[in-house]
Length: 357
Ligand SMILES: *Cc1c(COP(=O)(O)O)cnc(C)c1O
Image (cartoon, rainbow, N blue to C red; front, side, top):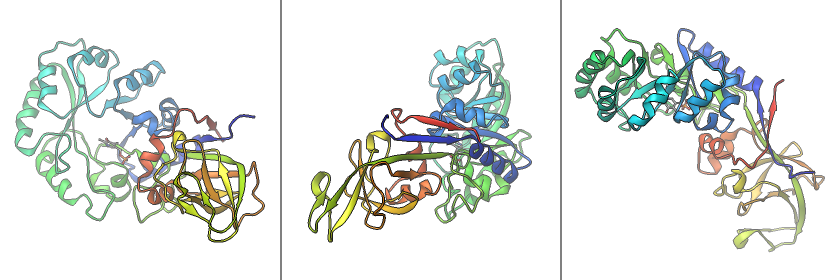
């Protein structure tokens, strides 16, 4: 037998979640965001499950090249565009669309001669102040793009900072409409939270990411309530148990101390597998189908769980770290992070098992 840890990726769940995006934004084309190895689910695995999407969005040029080599013919957008002139031949050869968010990128494009015209997504900074052109620069940049022989189609885009919280999208949407509203060009604004909550942002292309993997973008609304199914189930097994007496401690720095006699289980999963090291005592975990909690420090290869109420759980008992039966958001919240980070930090040493239904 091998170490019992695994991540199970469910294709039916991925496809269900794409359907939810489709039903939420029926009039828009979908650019499925599969950056960062498909949010940890596997680049080609995610693309394969989302073949119904009209486009894919990635960050890394190499991911786009891999997608083309695998035969995907959809629009593929590089979300941060290119970083230097040396990437342009591969971009042209693979017919990739690029975000232009900074003047340097435009200068590079203007100084280059390519065999094909590039589809460009012109990114507007409507308040997030991360990437994109400000209002004042917009019309000048747009004129230069329109004049440029390297440029094929132009799509106007922006990205929301607060679509998932109570601040919402109003201010940024207003700003976007003020700049882009009069332009007869395709538009793209919505991330998952806006896909689910703000139909007025849907426009021509929506760009859902996290929802496709079955995680809710909202703190106060669960994935289940949104009709989303967890695509990744991270699981392992108990590999040892200990009986503690009162005042005996567990793990590094003896962070947890037993108050009464209790049974604890040692799980084959640690931070080197991608489990968050900062998860506190009390982080939810499922053993033998029952909800319990972690105890003490997370180690590199193991973590410790409370078996006080699950006395029949011995070596070999199944453990769910997150996924089916235990929302990843619940784990992320207690660990002081977000599902995005948990997904993308899944370590390559964890074997992946595909479920095709
Ligand atoms: C990552 C990303 C998205 C997807 O965001 P989610 O919150 O995962 O839906 C959309 N647009 C841009 C520009 C992104 O970088």
